[in-house]
Image 1 (cartoon, rainbow, N blue to C red):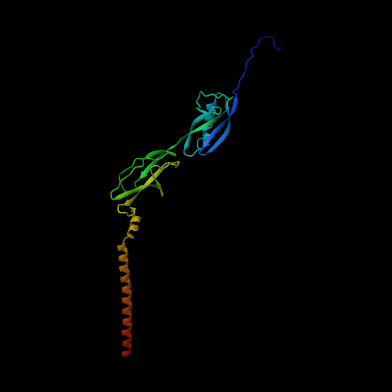
Image 2: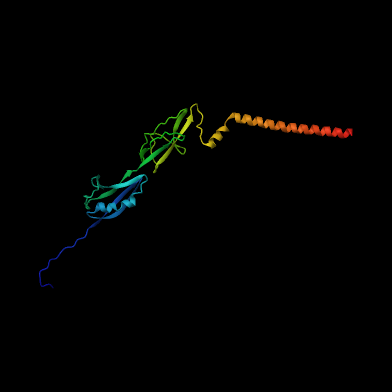
Length: 228
């Protein structure tokens, strides 16, 4: 009971609605129901960035769009976007391909430096350099045993270092200039084996001569005893 006029005030709270969030990861598509506050759609979606930012290899989640299922029209979501929750729509995650750096190793002692290049994930490589080297033919750029060529699709979710492979002009394999490889090259020389053969023959001849001398001495000693 009140004995005077009263002002009565309404109190309000933000309405929440549930929408479908569609996240595309390669060939897979994930749908998640998310509750969002009317008028705060972008803020609610921004909270999902941490959840989905690393779910697509080689890509970064950059923002959101929504698709009106009645018209199939796709629009970007901005701070001014307010959904009409009477309509049917899906929210779509937008990804941007990461950019990676490809560096180059000429694999021999030189002051020449090749500037690195950049390429987007799943992008086509079309600007690999063509180095030159005196007395050598450039074979190609390799990562381990895999050759990288112009026209290749870049599918490594990381920076990459490529090594040059060379062949001596005339068809010989490229020698490695490390001390160990120089020793290996020495074993490929036919003169090494000729020298080894001569040494072996000298050793065998020395052994046979020593045996012959020993036998001759034994005969002489035996004859000396017989004469006595």
